[in-house]
Amino acid sequence: MTRIPQQLVECMAAARQVLVVSGAGISAESGIPTFRDAMQGLWSRYRPEDLATPAAFSRQPELVWQWYQWRRRLVADAQPNRGHQALAGLQNCLSTMMLVTQNVDGLHQRAGSKDVIELHGNLFENRCSSSACGHLEPNTDLDATAPPQCPHCGSLMRPAVVWFGEALPEAALARARHGASECQLLLSVGTSAVVFPAADLAWMVKQAGAVLVEINPATTPLTAVADFVLSGPAGEILPAILRALDPEPSDGAHT
Ligand code: BJW
Ligand code: ZN
Image (cartoon, rainbow, N blue to C red; front, side):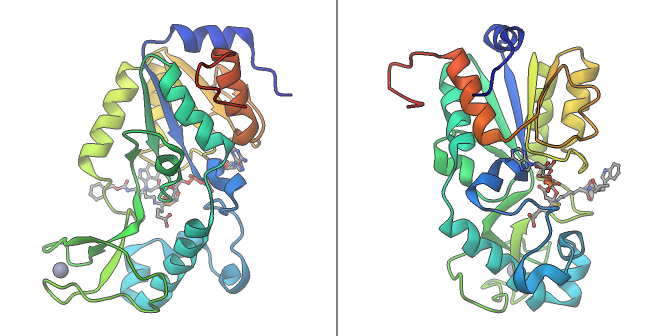
């Protein structure tokens, strides 16, 4: 069983505000490949970094659309795992916990986390590709093989996610940065911490002298500067943290 250092348990219990920044690794145990994992099946000859760009969508809208439809179906068939559930439990047992995610899969919300700040958008919404229009609507058809047209201006609809070179949603980023400036402890979970500006949150917290904790089976640029490195899968480590903080929950959680 994973052992959580007592000093970390005390830091977490004492923190008035904890900021959690999650990445694709937390959904790996739900069967969703991480962003930089090898792509599977038909998609194995593409690099995700080459599909998640506005230029790729302009060049080959159907190809990019079909990649997102494949990922949407994977996520729709998946379930939140023990890592997502433990984070939802932590939100109830810590004084204030803000959850910022780079993930677009909505699994935190499905596990019961509240007020999740999505930095890179959401797979299950579409936005008009004309920035002058910006019409937003839910994606309802998981089988359509081509992007639909915008009902307002006729441009192609695209997944409402943030691609490389695009600005993050302003309000979400401002809230995340405010959370980083206010927190006493940041938990970086399942992210390679190489994509900015999300990766900056941990560096901001470290510079301000707050505690940086990393949960990841692999090393990242944060590993060398983190105050606590919990090397292993989020689905084991997060429930162990919850048990250490709240050994006898009144609602029978973590059984
Ligand atoms: C486990 C596990 C288990 C496995 N348990 N862990 C500064 C320096 C250099 C470059 C830049 C910079 N600032 C900006 C840039 C450019 C660029 C960038 O960062 N490039 C770097 C790659 C170099 N950033 C941008 O372009 C951003 N935009 C921007 O800055 O705009 C400026 C602007 C301002 C004003 C006007 C216009 C422009 C946008 C970035 C958008 C990122 N979007 C994506 C795609 C989203 C949609 C989609 O999903 O298709 O977001 S890219 C991709 O990376 C996705 C992810 O959210 C993001 C982060 O990846 P993540 O989550 O860390 O996943 P992985 O796969 O990398 O790592 C998984 C980790 O899990 C691994 O470490 C595993 O070990 C671990 N793991 N199993 C725990 N069981
Ligand atoms: Zn439109």
